[in-house]
Length: 387
Ligand code: PLP
Image (tube, rainbow, N blue to C red; front, side, top):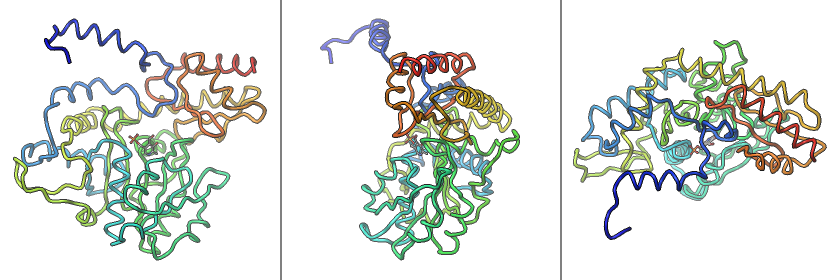
């Protein structure tokens, strides 16, 4: 820190010049991120209410009420009439909260409980195992990149505290057979959590758009909680994650009372104490502003571009699709070339793509347009030809 302060315009100019190496969404070069430029209205609302701390709910009674409304709107999108939950920092926190609830509800002592997840789960589940002292049992995938149901059944023991299904996997956007997981969960009385951090704002709109729409939500009776992130396909600001529970009673086991809050004694199950009320209000406002039709339009555009890219990849030599996309994620593989070499070639040309073990992942987010996809496939062809 300088001894004496500096004028704001000087600092702003320094910041601008110091941030030039950051990529921005307008460049169209960010093809591997699940975040996007937030909707301008979400940004606007966020900046208006930046000082609100919903971690002290008694101070912001009205904001708390609007959070309940936002959770109910998201719940309805997920076919749940009376939803319960929180707007949190992101998918990681939402997944932690779900399994914290599941562990405590099952009454498992730390180090004893087990959670059954697909191999394709997000790495937040490895963190969860470590943080909550739960053993994470990873189940291999079928050739459709879905959790192998037969192996799930074999993995269930008296120590199982939760099953996890993913609706829109991080690497390929695949959706696990959630209906079958739900039946197993009901049969064994086990908590089923669905990680729809990314897919949650996409899957509900697919049927109306005429695309296949795998079941994943609270219509399935075994589903107890769903992670769904406004800061991914919800066009919200960061931080903006969502956890939706079917039964509020279960969450009581993961709440800690605080007596000293200025707004009066309270108990919340979120990981953080101080929590952004601005995120909550901005999620509420954007849901109201866009409505189902607004989100449907966004998803339609992303899906059209996704299929445009998928068709182009299918026509190309030396690369292929890992699977036909279910949501707006495209996996590109090569049987003849080293996928790492292709990824490095693309990165050299400025493309911010994700590299997985055997494929490149492209996430078609709302900041992308057809000319970006065309220029990406042109570069991909060049990179492949050079190798
Ligand atoms: N779950 C899934 C399926 C994800 O793809 C991600 C992030 O990519 C997460 C959870 C974690 O979300 P966050 O980065 O907001 O913590």
